[in-house]
Each structure stands twice: as structure tokens, then as C-alpha cells.
Image (cartoon, rainbow, N blue to C red; front, top):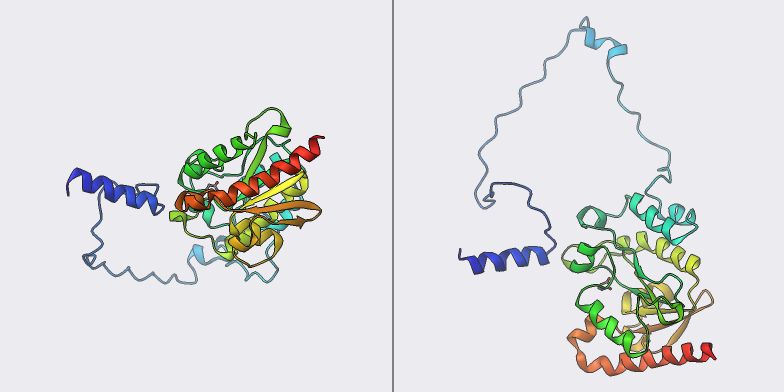
Length: 272
Ligand code: URA
């Protein structure tokens, strides 16, 4: 294999979600493994053996019949205990039921100014977000920052009224950027909903179909939902197009621009 081919193969693997080398030697999985010696039969201990005495043998764990304790795997219970956004991030670090956590490099919870009136919600971290542990820092995020700048907003602006706070529905990167499953999404949702409850943004902006459909409970496509204001527990929620979609379909930026102007209008009205 030439160097360029090897580099392309590695890049493809990274895109698919591989982020670790787990063996120093390559394994050819296309050849049959050598036959393994059968395990030695276990010696049967005579009853007089000291290990046969009840006090020295660990009894088998009784079958669990009680429901699983809330522990670190009950998303709703953990989220309900959080009083601040920092608590949520800390709870997510302890939460161990989401399988995406096992393949992700970093937790990716939120970025921006927590005091900002606008809270943007995307779908799930991609490769760059997984590496940096912050939402929207890759190509989509760069486009998002330019779009926000066009209406006078910046995620890290110290003046809250000119800043935004950004999070996602999913907090760990799905391997290879695949679509998160319903199970994964439902596990993360209580944390997002609690974050909204704590933060109480003046406006929510959903980027793309996933956050919009999950928060407003509608299944229509984003091209039908975008540009419309919905209500999320008393908070006005605007649906718009995801910047990754706009990178693929630049002609649709005009629709996103209309949505941004609608947000800007609301913010201007609030300022007067
Ligand atoms: N796309 C998302 O939906 N969220 C991110 O954080 C990055 C890309």
C-alpha cells in the first residue's frame, strides 16, 4: 500500500468513528484463527476440600428481581437533581447508560454565554466537537458563527444580549456521525430539557429536524417546520435549517437568512 492510500484508509477509518489503535500488531481478520486448545476440564473438589466449605466459597449472586436503582443510569432522575447548568454537565459525566459515551472521546455539553437570551440546539457532536468537547466547532459551527455574526450575535460575546448559548440533543458523538437511535436520543433528552428549564432562555432556536421534532413533538420534515415559531413550555421556539445542510445545499441559505431575520426582529423588539 502506498503512503497516500494508507493515509486515505486511515482518514476513512477516523470518519467511521475509529479513534484508537488497539493493538501494536495488525491482525489479518480474513484468515481463519489458529485452532485453540480445548480448556482443561475443571477438577471436581472432594467435599472434604477446604474450598468446599461454605465459609470459603463466594455464594452466587441471587438473581436480581428488584427494579434497577436510579444510580447513574436513570437519566430523568439524575437530570431532576440538577440545579445549575454545571450540575448537568457534571451529571452527564457520571451518567453511564448511554452507549455513545463508550465510543466518544469527550462529553460535548454546551458552549457560549449561559446568560444569553438565545439558546441554539443542534443534533449531535461531530468529529471536531468530539475532539474539542464543545458543540459546533467544526465546519458547520464556523458557518453558524458567520450566520450569527450577520445578525449581530456571537457565542462568546460578554454582553448577554449579543451572545448565544449552544447545546445539542445528543451529548456524545455517534460513531461515524451516524443518526442517533431513538434510545440514545431519549436518554439524552431529560438533560437537555432540564438545561432549558434551568437556563430559561428567552428564545430557543432549533437547528435542523432532530431538535425541532424532539422538542415540539411533531414529525413533519424541517422544510415544513422551518421559519415557524412554536411554543416550548412558554418559551418561543424557532425552527430553522441545520448549518451542515446549508453547507450541502448553499441555495437554501436564503431560507435560513429569513429565519435569522425573524429572530433578530424579536430581539430588536425586546430591546425597545
Ligand atoms: N452538528 C450538530 O448538530 N451539533 C454539533 O455540535 C456539531 C455539528
